[in-house]
Structures are given as structure tokens and as C-alpha cells.
Image (tube, rainbow, N blue to C red; front, side, top):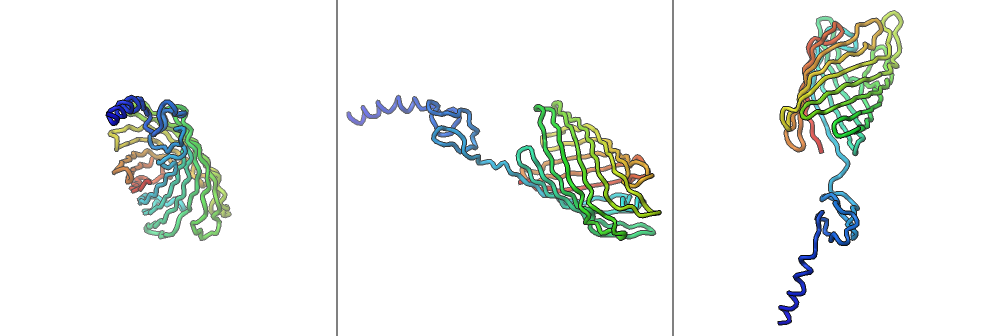
Length: 268
């Protein structure tokens, strides 16, 4: 009889326990309702640490083929392999990249490490559909110039993106301060302004594709602006692996007539 009475006394206590956000703290004493399910909480039900880290990284490797050598601005078959590493924390990202190139033509041959880039970016979400991305960084002179005139350059970028259901519209601007030393009677450098814009479409949850236009002043004075149109695709292989592919067609004599790029990335 005593056991039966004890059970009767416990039943209302069991049914009175309600934990709406599943954090292990009764709603009656939970001072932080609707805590994310992946957060650890204290005795008050308030988050103290999230099981999902706000720090993320990716590493990307890839290759590119183009038909122009931007060092000499001549039509040259150029193969490039690249390495890029990104770090993400909330709306902030850091990026480091470098590349190795090999150029070959009937009268010219060269290979070696190209310039390396360090950049920092901030993503400003104006609302759930419209975002602005600000960035700045340095282009380090890891390219070994035979003229010993290669110095660090600096850049700033501004980009905007608007998503309407499965459609995505984007535009960007970048300014690069070129600090390389002029070579008298041979080459004179200038700062550059670049513009881009286009539209993309989410063909599936894993596949995104876009078409864009790009225009940039040449870093060489007196050379026609670089103009091209490009087709880009991003495909998610699984929760960690992804790949990208792009093709660009040159619209000006200063641009590569054809350029193809393939990349493979790992996100963690």
C-alpha cells in the first residue's frame, strides 16, 4: 500500500515537468527559453557553450588554363596550380592563396611561383535576402621578377548579393593599388579598377550556376581594359567536399580568349 501511495504522489510530479526547448531545465525555472538544441546550458537554462563551433575552415586546390600571360600581356598558353586556405568566424573570413604557373609560347617560356594574396572580409547581412561583402588585403611579391621591380600591392573590394527564391543577383567592385616599379622605356604600371556583375540560379540544393561579366583596367598603362564573360558552377559533393568549375571567354584582345578553371575543396 505504501508503494502504491508513493507512485500516486509521483505521477503528478512527472506530468508537471515540461521542457519545451529540451535543454534539461524545467520551463518553470528556465530563465532562457528557446535555447538552441546544440547549446550547453547552466542551472538557469542559459547557454554557456555551443557544441557547434563558430570557427570553420576550408582548403581548396585547383588548376587553371588560360591563353595569356599577364606578366608580359602576350598570348601564351599558361597552366596554373593554386592553393587557397580560408578561415571563417561568424561574419568574418580570412583568406590566403598562392599559385605556381608555367607559361609556354613559340618565343617565350617561363615558370615559377606567382604572387600570393592575403585578405580579410566582412559579410554584412542587410536582411535575409540582401548581403554586402567588404574586403581588403595585400598581394605579396612572391613572384620572382627578372627586373627586380615587384613590390607588395594592396586591394579593397565591395560586393553585393540579392537572392530571390532560387535566383541570385550579384555585383562587385575592386580597387588595386599597384606599387611595382616602372621600367624606363619598357613598362609603366597603374592602379586598377575592376567591375563585375551577373546572375545565378540554384538548380538543386547541391548545384548552383551563374553567368557574369567582368571588366578591369590593365595594370599596364596604355593597354586595353580586360573584358570577359564567364560561366561558373558550384557543386556540393557531401557535407565536407565541394567542387567548382568555370569557363571564361575573352571579349578584348588583352584578355585570354579561353580560360578554364577546376577546383576541389574541403570544408570543416
